[in-house]
Length: 252
Ligand code: NDP
Ligand code: 8X3
Image (tube, rainbow, N blue to C red):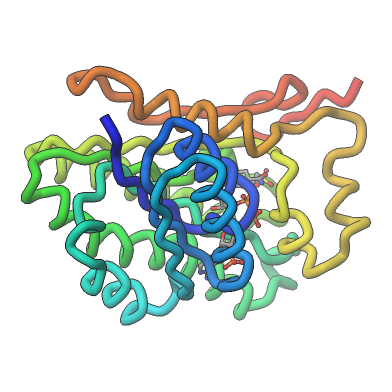
């Protein structure tokens, strides 16, 4: 059955890979991100390659009004959202608590936590009326284990893990599934964003081991959406072989 999938943060990394895999399986997509040009290009390519419908919506998930309006003003044919992938997010900085920037903390909380809540708040009523739906929240190993210099980012992802549990309890009666996906180190634009354009520093994260790819994570996310209606994957940690138990690495 063809479904409608809303993926936030689909201009790169996990979100883009999710768009690709859901498109390969002939589902229609609503894709979001701030970089409008990139978004339109991705939408055009997926439509052409897979013959599906793609609706690109460019807005900042930190903007409450923009989030609510984007969903409220969806054309009727796009309102039957089957799956929401709350993926848009970022880390900014990797500094000791006393040296970290308050602005970086605010951006991470506003994006990773509040943005996810705004979008979910707008989409949930569309799922409630249909008595079904699946919300996938992008957590992180950083939401399971705390590491030095992780402060604001770890706090934001711990909140995503907690919110996912809370949403699952509250939305159960509407038959809405909530899955929290917690990847470890993955090679996306994440590092370059975290280190504010310092590509060398970003790439040094992956020295000595093979990290996850966006496709690895997207395939697992897709799998969680293919299970029978009564089967739920609630919380899933995914790491590369070199990473265990949070951020413990073996670089051998
Ligand atoms: P990328 O930087 O490659 O992708 C991030 C995506 O989020 C982009 O599409 C970006 O779009 C979007 N985004 C960021 N901020 C905003 C905003 N304010 N409004 C709208 N969209 C936004 O990184 P990843 O693919 O790695 O990250 C995706 C998610 O996965 C994040 O939540 C991240 O925390 C999480 N994660 C990443 C891991 C990793 O090691 N890579 C591991 C575990 C979790 P645009 O810039 O166009 O707005
Ligand atoms: C990203 C993984 O370990 O850089 O969420 O925090 S980590």
